[in-house]
Image 1 (cartoon, rainbow, N blue to C red):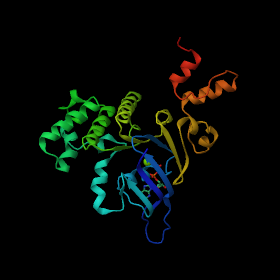
Image 2: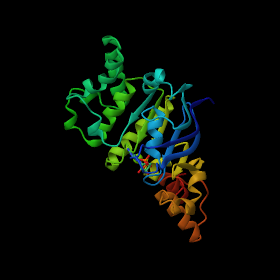
Image 3: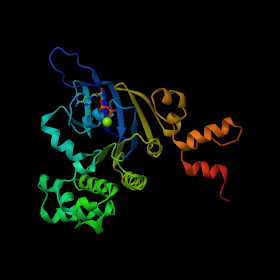
Image 4: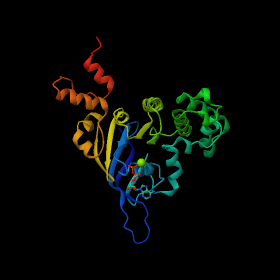
Length: 279
Ligand code: ADP
Ligand code: MG
């Protein structure tokens, strides 16, 4: 597989006032993210996840080391807009991301700014709204939508730019369980279509649905592996203030209680299947 993002020895500290010592928010991070992969990033507050996300589309640039996005160096001023077009970002608060008073105008905003011809904008907006199942609400005002629907419009706005990669920074944090489920289903759909997905989340159940989990601590990558590999390290995760997903935690406790459960239980469906196998 080819790397879509290649981060080599990346360090970054936010600017400080004179006399203060800068503290690295990212400290020697090296990470390769394959094209078309689905990666979750977890870690306690302040571990550097958002700073890493902003380095992925050149909202921030390295103090040291290098970030290559689809082969483009984020330190190169001439490439910034191309990088931002290829890597779409979705943030926590949907209200801060919607700029227009009508859903479809909001989705058109990005391609309009790129100078895409009107006919093609219409096509892109239709396609993006369909991808997030929001065609029926296209004429509505965003204020009439639920949190989950607003995030879906924000995702559609990113998709209308036809990015190769989408980065979500705690984008489900303000949503109810239904809204979170809607967003996760869209991400899985985009992943199946070959878009590279990077999902920063504090919901372990969401991380368990990725192909790979990267764990951050104090500006460094401290674990990196499949959900099964990472969640097998329960003690280390707890030491980082991270919980195990409910199903994995419960399966572990049932095993301790003497129940013979198979390995590899990640989701509630897996646990259910292990406890009451469907014939
Ligand atoms: P996370 O997203 O994992 O909570 P962040 O990347 O936001 O972590 O923060 C990493 C470190 O950088 C923390 O120590 C945080 O206080 C600091 N930091 C984050 N944003 C800023 C900023 N705008 N100015 C100064 N320091 C910041
Ligand atoms: Mg953050």
